[in-house]
Amino acid sequence: MSLVIRTRADSPDLKKAACSIEQAAWSDLGYLNYTRSGYELYTRLLEDFADYQLCLVDEARGYPVAVANCVPIKCSGLDELPAEGWDWLVENAAECQINGSANMLGALAVSVPSIYRSMGYARIMIRALLELSQRKGLNGLVVPVRPSSKAQHPTVSIDEYITWTDQENRPYDPWLRSHIYSGGKIVRPCERSMVVHEHIGFWENWSKRKFDCSGRYEVRGALVPVEIDLARNVGSYEEPNVWVAYAGSA
Image (tube, rainbow, N blue to C red; front, top):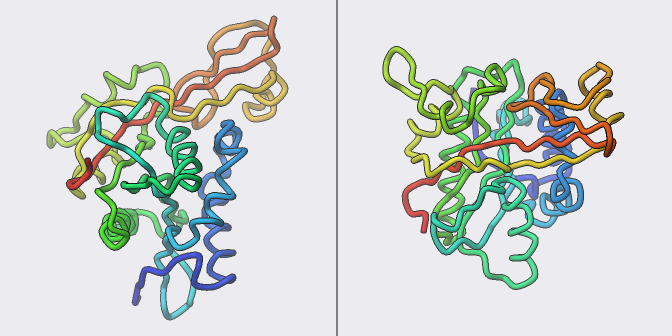
């Protein structure tokens, strides 16, 4: 298989295929589309920065086997990286569009179809993001990493979770492990990386269950429980991610 990196800006067909891959990869976690910044800004940013949206294309088929989404942001240093994570990147990129002050690349997602997972394509996309940062003259790459196996341990704090290691003393989480082995360094958790505040019916639809009393409830795929408040008719989800930075980041 001959693979090449292209972008959504290269053709309408590639853009359409990339959108389909991203939607399929994250369909079970569709509630994450309803963070305020994601709902209001994300799609437009991908359109406006189409040349930043990477596709790993199988040249023989002309179809992508992995995609990565990112945006240019302003960040004066790693100490500035906040608890808001993914939502902050989106809002930051929208602000940079206005004032043209971007100096760094922020990665938003890497999506690989299930049939192509465990083939090393995600790490190829990480390298492609680093190369894009250099090509655009930006000062490195920061990523609010969504630890892929944290959903199996929703009641464990993110601070504890990132200290776990496997039998070979590698990071326990496979997606964090991929970033570390690609040259990334853990900076700190971003405890409110993706925040969703929605009515009870919204969460009942996603969880396929009724909420008869207030409390903390586990939802399939969620990294932490959802806080249900029946009196206010609101369910709040604050997803923790982990800031990872690559060499050259400010």
